[in-house]
Length: 269
Image (cartoon, rainbow, N blue to C red; front, side, top):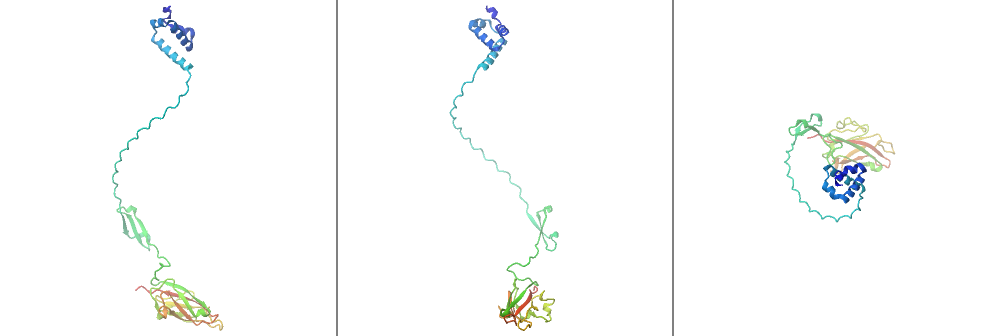
C-alpha cells in the first residue's frame, strides 16, 4: 500500500486537478497514513508544490480579522543638540571713492562739475548748476542792476499821499537825488531814459515814478500831478529800502491818481 503512495502528489493532481482539492486530499492522506509518506519521503519539487498550493489556498479562504485598538502614544523623543555656529565669511573688498572733477562741457552756460568713481572714467556723470531763480531768494535783497516795478494809485483825499512798497528790498535807501518824478508832458530825465508809464525803467541806483493821463482833479478836469517821493523811515525826501510815500496835488473827494514806478538796484561796487 505504501509503495503506491510514493508519488502521491502526482497521482492526486492528476485525479483531482484543483489546488483546493489537492490540499484537502493531502490533509486526508496525512491523517490516514502520514507515517508512510514521511517514511517514503517526497521529492523537493513535491514539497515546494505542496507549500505553494497550501499558501494560495490559505490566502483564498482566509478572512481578515477585526482591526485592533490603537496603541498608546510613544514616549517623547529626546531633543536634539544645537548645531555648531557657522564660520564668519571672508571680509569684502573696500569700495571705491567718488571723485569730483572740475568742468562739465555738457552743462553749457550754467556750468557744473563731473563726478565719477575714482579711477573709472566710464562712470562719469555731469552735475549742472541750476539757473538763477526769479523772483530772488526770499529774505534777500534786489541783486545789482536788477529792476522791479509796481503801481501807484489812489483816489480822493487818500490820493494826496500814496504808499508804495518794494517786493524785494533794496540793498540801501535812496536819497532825494536818486528819485525822479515824470509827469504827463515832462521830458524824461537821463536816469529814466526809455521808460514810460506803460513800461517804466530806471538806471542803476534810481527810482523813477511815471504819472499817467488817467490822473486828474475831477471838479476842474485839470491834470493831477506827482509832486514828490518821501522816505518815511529817514523822514526826508528819497526812498527807504522797502518803499516810499508819493505826495500828489490830488486831495478832493473825486481826485484820482494812476501812475507806475521802476526802481533798480545800484551796480556792484
